[in-house]
Image 1: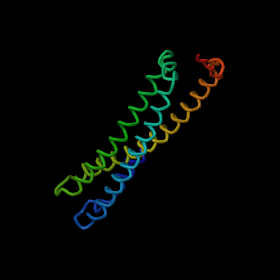
Image 2: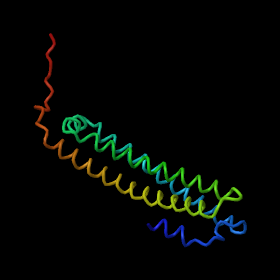
Image 3: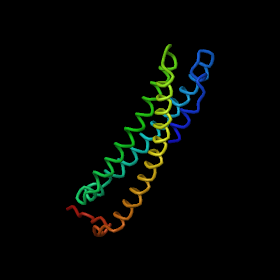
Image 4: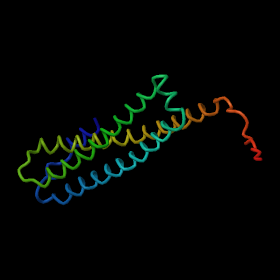
Length: 158
């Protein structure tokens, strides 16, 4: 909703030849910001996969039909973060082209802002999922039965 309101209230001059530097700067900023969110998201995804694949915890999640939910959430977050980069790049290209209708320009910036806002939400969700997994993994590992003594037997030779 907020993205649509911003796109609607932006003056038509924002896309004019005289203000092209401003509109290009806005889209470059959005594109850079979304690229950073995507890069940070990949780092969080890597950490989440590390926890999912650590020891028997991933097997436990799979046996209890919980693993697919985490993988689906990661995929969903990744799709929106990539979408934010693509829409921002499309907006940058659109402001560089001549004769783009004002309505199309407003729609593109609306979607660019919408995807950016949602990508931020997904990045926060990735951190929440990572924290949840770390906590659940620690609980799982602390409840594992002891594997026996940690004393290594000495072999006698001869």
